[in-house]
Image 1 (cartoon, rainbow, N blue to C red):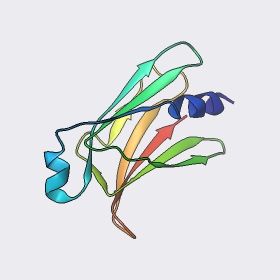
Image 2 (image 1 turned 135 degrees about the vertical axis):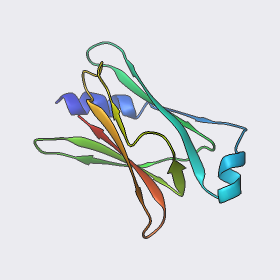
Image 3 (image 1 turned 30 degrees about the vertical axis):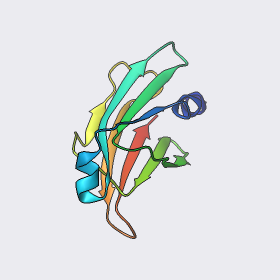
Amino acid sequence: MKWLAFLLVVFAVTVSALSSATLAASSGLVAIESISHAAGSEASEQLIFKLSEQIAPKIMMMKGNNPRLVLDFANSKYSGKDVIPLADGKLATAVRIGFHQTPEQKTRVVIDL
């Protein structure tokens, strides 16, 4: 059930739209500029996505022995690390980022719970 608590926290993720959207404007893609993690109490963690423009991700949950929360950001790009370990995470252990080209370009963020 710890993934459920994390899921509720992720819905409170802060997505900030920045006025400096020149990088995204030049390519037509929204830039995911940074992904950061803040651990609160045992039942509270935050992932903060800093974007060049405001977009809402498609959110899916993958259940099973290794539950994961998946966020798809359409028409976006990310140039940071592919894996972000969360050493101080109690609900989430890592964030993995991948790219998909078809049917449209998107950045997939997978949060291991």
